[in-house]
Image (tube, rainbow, N blue to C red; front, side, top):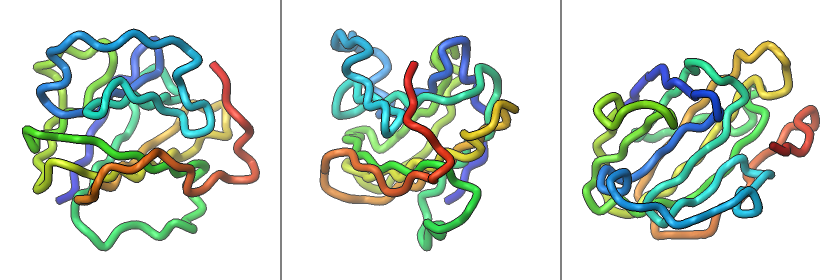
Length: 158
């Protein structure tokens, strides 16, 4: 199934993706050294991640849970990373950092363990017209990895 959302990336330019039960618990402490700058994400547990955007406003955010998936050589993407999540409730929530939990977007999953391929588009311009796509499929838990990085996309720092 495909979902198209507008997510408010907030003043901290982050979007959280995780199991619906993950948002109600205390998160482990982390600092900037925990952020994977190459992949533009941080794991806040095995059931919750936060990705970093360029914009600090509403951004287009597509979620796709139905194969076949995108062509990885599509020139729209500046960065593609993969990571895993555990989702015992099989309900994945997507929300901006300052959004209320009631404002989170909901995605139903068929598996409790999933792999996410995160696509980052228009990251190399100052226009703040960045956009995102996440493809999700059932898979056992694996380490995060870089799939693709455009030659135009420089290493990122906060």
